[in-house]
Image 1 (tube, rainbow, N blue to C red):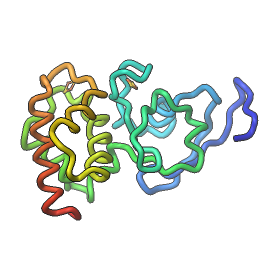
Image 2 (image 1 turned 180 degrees about the vertical axis):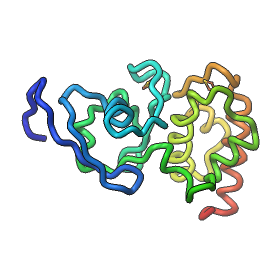
Image 3 (image 1 turned 135 degrees about the horizontal axis):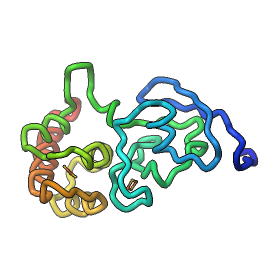
Image 4 (image 1 turned 90 degrees about the vertical axis):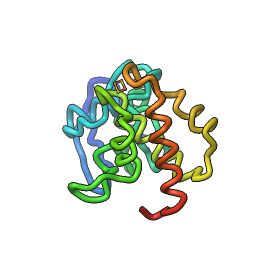
Amino acid sequence: MPRLSAGQRHRVSFSLNGRPVAGEAEPRLLLSDFLRGVLGATGTHVGCEHGVCGACTVQIDGVPARACLTLAVQAEGADIRTVEGLAPAPGRLSVLQESFREHHALQCGFCTPGILMSLDAFLRQRPDASEAELRYMLSGHLCRCTGYVPIMRAALAARDRLREEPNA
Ligand code: FES
Ligand code: FES
């Protein structure tokens, strides 16, 4: 990465949910703020802003990452996927989203985008994940509303359906 000066704006460009995007960012600007404030992609939520709650989780080159611990300039050239990119088509939900809807796995929905982005990547990597492994993965996300039981039910149901229909 070239040397960056504080206060100076730099052009940042990457792929967002399969589409090229670009904007200006100071070197200190967080990816979460760039997504929301510069690109208007407000599906990524911001809670703690220091890597604890998981609300801001996006996928960077397929790997879940805290957008509040990533600088926008670090995303240059990357393939970024956010919750806006999960649905397979307008008016449709992914298997995981559908499972969250069916199992009432959200209340206020603040934590939901981050949880979905982590689970989506995890279930693609680990289609045979055990309940214990799913619980461990979810321990990186804080939800103030649901008590986690419906989230686990939704995660397990999505895992089972994706095992049967991996291309659903
Ligand atoms: S806002 Fe990024 S982990 Fe909480
Ligand atoms: S649904 Fe409200 S914080 Fe999780």
